[in-house]
Length: 337
Image (cartoon, rainbow, N blue to C red; front, side, top):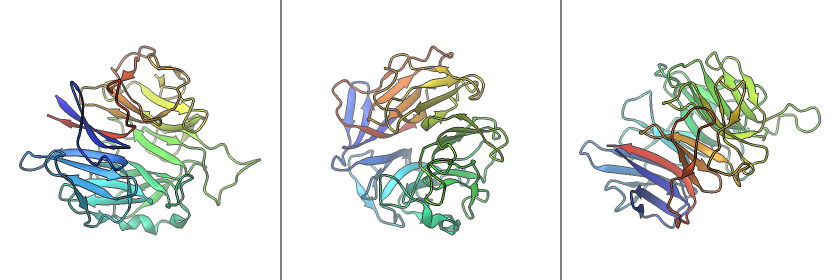
């Protein structure tokens, strides 16, 4: 059993067996959401807005308060457990920063070493005046002090000392990193989802490298191979099917997407989009693995899809939302038990 919380363009909702339960903040666009149980067993929900900071509920969404302590970035893009410190949380933001909380999201401290990276001042976003965005944070299995973070548009960055110091990971010419993930049991296998944008100091136009797609590393990030060239925001190795790789590329930004699957770590692909139109009206923004082993897909148009893990070619997607639900989904999280 698990609960599902959604961040939407009209607040936070909880999915129930009979539909959705609004939990407030309906005047906020919620771009990141995370739920946990505190030491007393109460449900704490963190809701990161896109522009108005972070909100926190300690009573399962009945009441909310703005989080002021240490959270200085206005837009949250991801909230996730911190694998380097048991019980801690990390929040990636726009502009491109990462914050850590040691008290269930009540207060936060910036991992300031990110700002020491050369070229930090060049980070940007094509759709926002803010300087870059940390879209997700990933720790390879068994590497307890290593953090990898995708920065749009800034590059793939890593820390090997629990977030104190940071360095760039060279993913060829690509610095428009939308997502970093990997194999659930093999830290050597990594996948970076790549966009078409380039830093202003990079070559563009005739003779410029081909940006975008999916890059794969089989040596923990030392070297990379491009296994897809279409614009991509999401890949996942489903924990229940670690022999497969799912991806959601699209030839155009935000539209005409597809869902594909690979049995050979991206060397070849086949369709995995039964149940939805291909090409899609939008594209996959993020894949999530649920506690029941299903895979969920948040789409750029606000749809939320889910599918049971299956053999290649047998993935069947359906909406996880009631037919009359009008809000656009931007984030989702699961709370087990």
